[in-house]
Length: 438
Image (cartoon, rainbow, N blue to C red; front, side, top):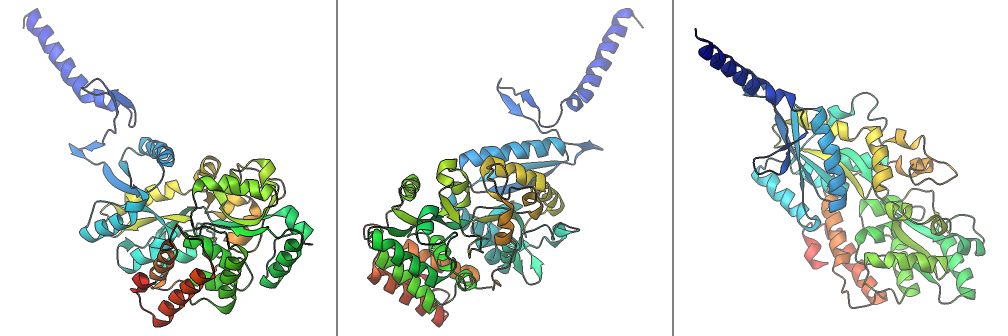
C-alpha cells in the first residue's frame, strides 16, 4: 500500500471514531451551539443497541412567569442528573388551566403530571382522570405528611396526589387593639369577638372589623371557620348554620362600606390601616404575611388554632391516568417533593412546605423568613373534614356564588341575605347543577 493511500485510510478511521465518540463527550443538559449560531439546551439520549432509551414525560403547571422560571431551573437540574429521563414543563394561564386539563383528560393528551390545586383533585380522581399514587408514600413518607394537606387527596381507599406546598389564608389581627380589649391573643369564640367589638367601638366608632376580598369564596370560608365549632362545617361546604349566618350578617352590618371592588394592590393599604389601628383584622395568605417588613408583622397576631382553610391554597402533583410513563413520572414527583427541596422553595417562594420534618428545625419564638414556624404544625397536622364525591362540585358552586357579586355595588345585609338563601336552598335541594341559579 502506498504512503498516500495509508494516510487517507488513517484519516478515514479517525473521522469515523470522532463521529461515534463526540456525542458522548457532551454532558446532558449542557449548552451547545445550534446550526443557527444560537445556543440551545441539549439533552443527549442514552443509546443502547442503536435504540433511543430516553423516556420523555410532560408536566403541566399553572403559575406566574417568575415561579415558572424557578421550577424550570429545578427541572434542568433533574434532567442533568437523570439522562435516561427528559422532563418538559408546560405553563398554562390560570384562567385556562382547569377547563384545558379537563379537555385534555377527555381526549387523552400526553400530559403525565399536573401540579394541581387541592380543591380540584377529588373531582379528577372520581371521574377517572387520575391514577393513585399510594406507592409514593412508602416507608416514613406518609407519616411525614401534614394531615390537613392529605385529607382532600383521599378517595376510595387511595391517595391521588403528592402534596407539594401550601399558601393558606389566615385571619390576622391588630395585636395592640386586641390588648386594648383585654386579650393577649386572637378571639377563638364568637361571643368573645362580639365583646371585643363592643369594647373597641365604644372609643372608636369608625373602626372596621375585617377586610377581605368579597368576590373570593376562600376568604369567606376563612372568616366562617376562624371561630370554634365552625371549622369542619366551613370546610365541608354544607348548609350555613345559624352561627355562620349570624357571622355573615354581622360583618355586613359592621362593614357597611365594604366594597366588592378589591385588588391585590390594596393589600399594602390594609397593612397601613392595621398599623394605624383603623382596622382590627384582615384575611392574608401566608406568603403575603411572610413577605411583610418586620415592623408591620410584629403588629399582627395570627390565631394558633386550626383554620378551616389550612389545606386550601395547597398544591399537589397528580399522575394522569393516560400517562404511559408512570414510573419515570413518579421518580420526578418523588425528587421534587423531598424535604430539602421543600425547604429551599420556602426560602425562595414563601409557600409553606408539606412535610412535617421541614418544620422541626423552624423557629418557635423568634421569627425567621427562611424557615417555617413549627407552631404551624398544630394548624396543618390535623384532619378537618371527610371529603365526599360531591365536595368539589359544592366548592365550585360556593366560589361562583361570590364571584357573581356586582363589583359596582357595596355589600350590605340585602346582598348577604340573598346569598344565604341561594346557598342553603341549593344545598338542601341537592341540585349539583344549581350554580347558575345562585
